[in-house]
Length: 403
Image 1 (cartoon, one colour):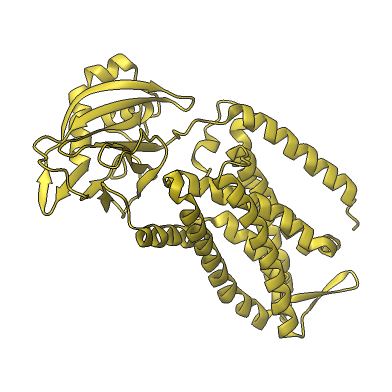
Image 2 (cartoon, helix red, strand yellow; image 1 turned 30 degrees about the horizontal axis):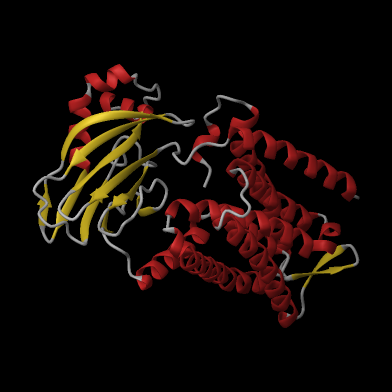
């Protein structure tokens, strides 16, 4: 079966253009679905802040029902103010050298965004004395029984001790189920700590970023095979297979490093929906090349182009983790090294297994061909999820799959 490459390329180009312009028009603000934010204002002898959470999430809190998805009105929030204050007071704890600090919620305000209206729950930490350099912070948000997928972020909103201007985007801590207690630094973070933190983020992101993992696996499936005419045959040369794998992974690394750098320093940015949609398509295209070897004649071009989009995807994860601008370069380097460490670990685990079983008929029929078909199906499903809200306004399908 012959695939008209020119026609496929034109179709793919036109689809990307359409997704780009629609998603650019629909791109959201820094606040996102299914998230809450804890801001701290730090002074020499004062500590205050606010929790920002959506009207939709507060509806779950007031009803004590995680299935509720109709947002509260502002009047309903005001009427339930004390219940809401008590809920979050029970789910946030600040500890200074073993002493639990009292947190007093005192007022609320509203912040309309393109995502939802966020309610700001303002609080003070009275009798702080001299504000410490660090606190042990626990924050559960809605993660216990109402929304296990809810994510919480802690940010230093301002810090008069260090001259830090009001900050709305550089995140200090990231809370998920099982990771609700962390150290919040209220002064400058040591360089070594920043490097190790972002190195860890990079490693875990490539391991938990299933779309990136499946893209690598799609590439590795053919790494232990060689083209003979127009058909695949098992490789009989370990060194050659390993060298080809290193070349492909290196091309992917160079490509995503370029765009990760450009996006991190805001030189070039793309809408998140567009990037995530193309990443999903990248898996399908590479897997399709496993089924129709003609695509593999220019495999390095395909890997490089899609690697550029994966770099934008990494940047979408790195950006909300947050750093002050002076330390962006350090965070970028550490995060990228972490990504490469995680990527190499996947290759070192998967490649030897595939090489050992490459000569078996079951590998070609089940793992290579069947696996490629499965990857195409998964990728197309992800593509649908990630673009449903673009092409079908009002759909909730895309709200929980980005990032």
